[in-house]
Length: 366
Image (tube, rainbow, N blue to C red):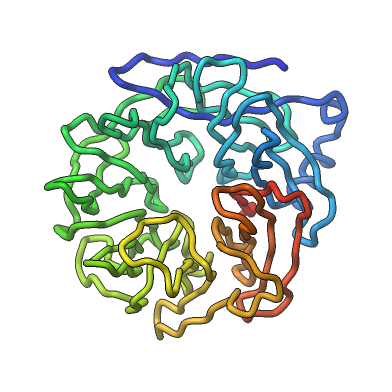
């Protein structure tokens, strides 16, 4: 495996996780057109948990292919905006987790960072800027503060954006690339904030405690987020300027969304919920995958009528046309056994895509 190490500017307490890949001789002989066809056909990528590989599959469940593999963890793969590259956190011949990119055909793996992260560090999904020139992420030691960083994909540097006495996490780019939303733990609770991509003009957008996982609408006019009040966790939507905060789910359940929860047309938000679960717990995922129309607030549970019993419906991703979702079903807790499924937003065409029992973190090319 050949890895190109790009220039990394060392900063205090900076540790970054990454995407990695390996190149097969077959892919080196693929023509450009064949490679592009692979992106079109094998549009869903995911992490093979326990197998230390990133794989792709067609939306109909055929064409399972391994793009990248390692003897260490490879996590949170995400498509670049132009679908020519992937980014992910991983270990490939490094002492700790780092951030990598790789071409869509599995070739030309590039290590963006050179960090020696310790076990138990906090990190979440890397976020591409809309123009594909930068990747934002958060990192922090398990016993220290979490901060937000940005790395340039051309190798010109990695920079720490937040360095205050708060823990900052979950960076999310506005669609125009002019702002990054994030949550900052102030007064012992997380609040919604925004800043410029260079780290300047950090502003608390909502003075509302227990805010989590901001997600911009496709037109950039709104931000969806989780707010926890007491023992209830609901999905809220707020205007990009912080006005008109409203609860759109209004339930008594624990609900969870991902940074790409909005449908491509901005009409729906996908989320998971856990009816009947112990209140107050913050667990990623839920027992049911649902969508809600942001305008009329009509809800539809997509997996309430699953014909197979599963414990949790977790990570999900929208199809490019916004008519379907791919998602992970856990058959056992703690990621022991999970597979990919897809379903139309009208509840039809329920399909199992994998039989490996190791499929996590799906991302459908947009």
